[in-house]
Length: 460
Image (tube, rainbow, N blue to C red):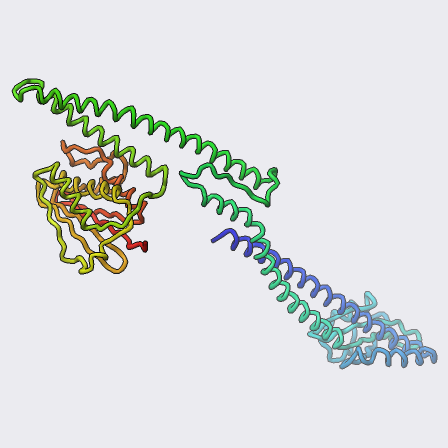
């Protein structure tokens, strides 16, 4: 999950929870407040009714009528119940059919009043000492707060619709703020995309940072790292240039002198074969140095220059002629049964020198490790790719060694005395990777090896 999505989800969930908690709080305490107010109105009604009955005063009778008229609309579907209680008793002998338990009336007598809810119906009971009659009085006022319930419903609807709208706005705002928060990081990533081995002098900058905040410190650290990498790469490039010149010149001299001395000696001379060995290994050392230089240059540049349109079949035939001139015993055949009729279908846009090196290494390996058997090169083409397959029937590669075949200087455990430096396949793979091609290898020990190179037909 992306950080942007995490920020949006986290911000939305927290805000929604806060809204829900706030809505529940408002709804609950509004309900409690409306219920309390309604209980007060019922209590006032019960007091007025009780005073009217207990005192039997004319002014109270007039006040009773006025209050009853005032509260009539708010005490709908309600009535007043009069319950007589023997003086000195804390229980009622005769009580109307109301939902309150018997203990409710006992508490009312002891404490002077009581409240009870049965569904939506509210009950308030008030106890009066009646000095004019033989029994005391309990007045129970009953009513349903339709006005309060309607207000509660309207409030709940408002909270729900407002909450849904607020959540929608919160989600939109969370996307906006997530984009704003991550914009500096996106800018850094865009700048980093411009940095490669050939452009280490590029430096990062963000207009959202003042240089002293966490983002500024991150940018400063990345720029410092790029500076160190730039210095390191320049040092390596300088070393490779100097090393190639310093190593190749003596090797060329050694090889040339050895060949010259060899020509001046008869084959029967004991130093003849020593000079031959010196010349041979001088050539191999020069080949190793050239391969290492190629690897290094490709790694530094990260791109391919001097691309031209080349025909793969013609390139492979040139490689065959070159290898045949070196290894007279090379047995190689071409399988052209699947090539297209149109020769343009076999053209690719690539660096011919690099492709020559890559395919030369593959074919040379097939010959070296092929036990002198026939090497077959098959060429095929479809609408998207050109595929080259190189078969040999040689010693193969053990299963345990196959994960390491593209590691520099790594050689299979069964090569024995066959000469190699462990760089051929590595160099070939790097060349194909830079061209967007794919190199795959399948091998069975003792049966042979199949190398498959798939080259996309890139428009040019």
